[in-house]
Amino acid sequence: TCAFLRAAIEGAGLTAHAYTSPHLVRFNERIRVAGSLIEDAQLASVLAEVLYAAEAADIGPSFFEATTAAAFLAFSRTPADAAIIEVGLGGRLDATNVVTPEVSVITSIAMDHCEILGESIEKIAAEKAGIIKPGRPVVLGRVPPAAERVIRAIAGERGAPLLSVAQEFGDDVETYPSTNLEGDYQRWNAATATLVGRLLGARWRLTPEVIARGLARVDWPGRWQRTTVGGRLLILDASHNPEGAAVLDSNLSRLARETGRAPVVVTGVLGLARARPLIQTIARHAAEIHFVVPNQPRACSHAELESLVPPEF
Image (cartoon, rainbow, N blue to C red):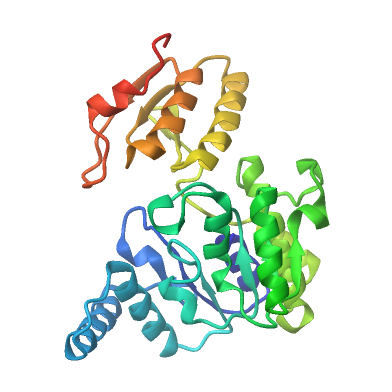
């Protein structure tokens, strides 16, 4: 959704800062200053400044807090027309929640980061809704009904007008805006970005035509990204929670219909709770599964991943 918004804003001839996570290859990907990845020298400078200030104040910031402060420091020193800020885990206690936005956006709600955000959809929704500010409009993506009730209640308490993707576009994904990225969920994201564009409207030169052009030329690596290796199709995808597993299920099913054969899947996962729905989904579609262990403390071992493969595979 952030990428769609950036493409639309830049397509209108405006400049945008962007703060997103995680990065895929280089840390710099998290921070775009007026449209360009932050340069190494500037990144080193603002991080050093943040850490020096934290030490002087006897504060021990988390990785994400330090990164957020560095990004905002870099943004404050370079003019731009807009800043697109993605939350970390999201919501009430997020480091990004010092921002008072033109529009708050809640894209989706899933059972993820439950140990921090809560063990139910309602609790997670309440935490995510912590970004809603008094009187500032909210765009709500496709979320479970229980989550929507919580978010609508909080928006109502804060006098924040709410625009819902489901209400505006309905249930049929074919009525949703088109985009050059694959997958139904990208059309849901495109619809979310479109509603934000409508709210920002003429003052930001975000006409329907400008928004549509942005949706058609967005680039977002790692999300069902097609490439080739040695002449063979390779798809890179970063699905990592139960909601993502449902999308992956649909994409793998479509891929099998397109190619006429089951794919070979190479996968690694951080955390058993995330791994279970992903491995079950992959096992329904794959000809072979090859497990890898990412160099990360929360990575599942080979044995843990193998234990999740259904016996009939």
